[in-house]
Amino acid sequence: MKDQRIELRLPQQQLEELDNFIDSIDSQYKPSRSDVLRSFIAQGIRGKFTPAGQDAEMFPLMARLNIFFQICQQLRADNKGLQPLSRASDNLRFSIRNYKESTVTAEALVRHVYLQRFTWFYELDQAHLKAINKTLGQGTLVLSLMNPRHTPEICSVLDSVIAMRDMFARIDSVIKEAENKLEAYPDSALSNSLSRIDGYARDNGVPLRFRGYPDTEDYTQQIQMWSMLNWIDIGEGSHSISESGQRHDQDLTGKYAIMLEVYRNITLNQRFDLDALEQLVKNRQFLS
Image (cartoon, rainbow, N blue to C red; front, side, top):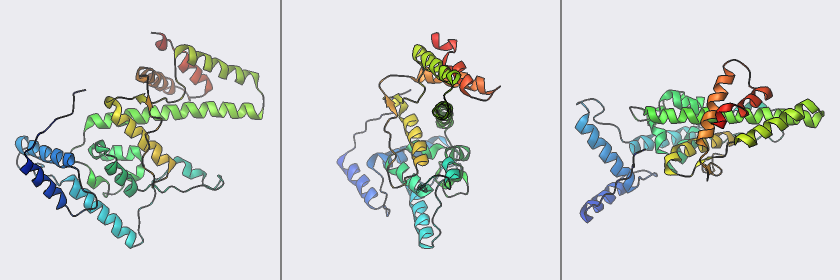
């Protein structure tokens, strides 16, 4: 990955003009110097290389955000506030005691995306907004924040994060189901199966739970994406998006990639159950 950092030295007069421009923005969410300079550079590049009339006058992100939050504010004033984003656990609300409804709305998500500088978010297309949460891809409110052209590379990164997250969720579900059966009724065959899986996983260095990405700049997007998906599932919109537990001092991405490849091959032809999990952890690809 290319180094994305650029150091700029501006004369004092230009810095003052830049600060005056930021101060003139009538919004609760004022951009930083870096945000404004990135926007100016992007507009300059588009103006240089984009044919006239084709996205030459892109509506700045800060202006789009300002309008978005004004609309959200008006909706709340009219008692038509945005509904929380859906969660898989919502189907269990009547069977879980003291079930807590989610407070994560599209407005809460966009606010934290802005405050925590998840800049990749604005480079997604509608299909990948839906991949994060189906509610995000409905209507035009959130879609209007996206850049005119999505970035395929970022969409591909999100695809890989979602696929891997789904795989680990399924592995966890299979193990918990087996452990719950053992608690209810002793079963030597089931106990032996879990023991074999633990042994193969240990011998082959296969993580049965997600351990995190390498703590480097190269994996910033993946960490932020995984953290956002977790935050939506937790459903506490007033809290910031926590990246806790998403970093690891070892680089396990090679293992993750093999796991995902084997998982996909297995699930092409069969349901992923305990036997399928045993097939995964003892796969010979982990020995190479």
